[in-house]
Amino acid sequence: MKLYDLYPVISNKTVRQNEKKFIRWKNRNKEIPGKTMVKTNRGYFLDGHNIDQKSVDTWFLLTENDINKSC
Image 1 (cartoon, rainbow, N blue to C red):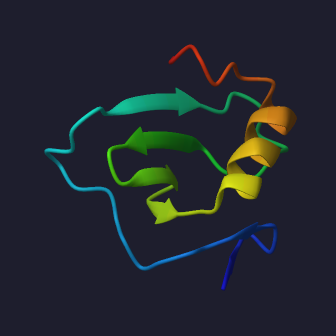
Image 2: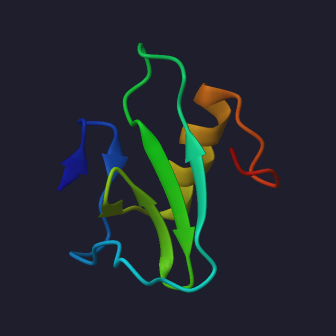
């Protein structure tokens, strides 16, 4: 399954309310698919979907967000 026909989804995990190490980035460019990236102790989630590392790298490259700084 691919999210927005661009980012491969690797599992059916979803973000839980009380996650550990919860970091969030927002996409301010409406032309790029994916509104919110979240990093938890269980991986990266884009709009609630668990995505692979290549998708994470692509999203950060497209949105020009810094993976080391949260928004």
